[in-house]
Image (tube, rainbow over all chains, first blue to last red; front, side):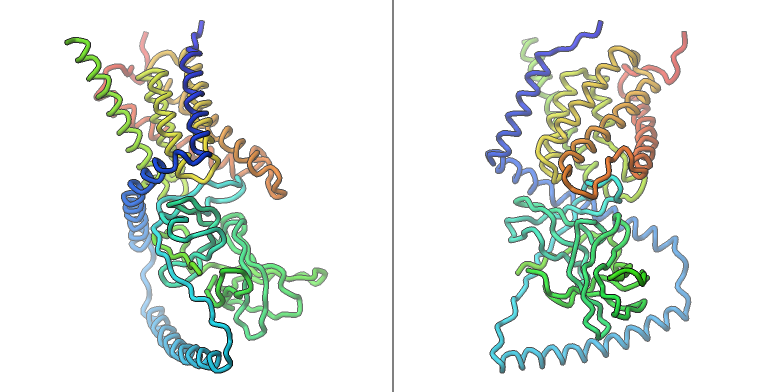
Length: 269
Length: 184
């Protein structure tokens, strides 16, 4: 005969109900905030350490870079430096011209740095885990919908939910992460970028008359509130076009390794 | 004098369990979740919960649910109480099996308990998440999704491996554990 102690179970359930009520009335907030603030730093350190071990293991086990590859990389780097210098001068000229024409001042964004403390839970079983938790929240001015970039300024995702001291970031490959984007091909091709099954990114609603090529860079279009223009998302790897459809799709590969993030920045207007 | 000693010992035990809960949670949150693929699926909190239930009893198991469930609920962005409820159901089912079927403390009884508790944990948690996102048109019921079963399979394998290792570590320090195979 299996004996179940109903008194203990009832007491336990009562404690749970009290905790839930205290949480939803925010009476537990001081305790929760205290726990989160104590735990965030060591958790971030351990998480970053494990990610750095993974990177080291991957670097050791990957094939050696050939001399030719190295030369090509150096060449590409030099041309990027030259292009960057040109763009910098255009930016300065743009700013001056705006001032002369009395345009409204562009919104200044500040970068709030945050450490990754863990991976989130997958809401959709059909999807790989493509959310991360960071140790910054509403207290630092972060709110839902803000853009998240890595240390090189490349987009990694958007803020999906926030608590007082932590936030959940939907990475670019998450289906909840949708961004208004444009392709840098001189044709002003606009579309919506959306994560696909936690594995890749798809850009949809691209008009059929636009010519898209492999290798084209995709950047944020600035048409969304609180998301500035010009932040790189990735590059086009495949174009899906069907002549009886109104739109065409592009598969985009992110430029950043989304599985090994340790430090990110949130763009706060 | 003896009563005071017993009370101190109880407080020490509560403190030890509390610190253990925090350590297990931190290792689960930061160390294990940082890994990709199969190693990242290890559910260390669940395994420790089963070990505590089997070695220390139902009351201590409920205490661990309160601790672990509370920490999980404040860190993960699911409605508060989801993890408390999930762990509670897992422990109830495991306790029922412990009293009725897996009555010895051998390795294969742990394997059996971890097997059942992993499945119950994943089904209950995914069910709660499914109802949370019920009105979203893109949600297919998780039991019909191939990815769910693949991940569950990987989680079961890695949980069993961890159970095997932890069993021998615990049996080194605690004589309450039985041998791997029971001899008549």
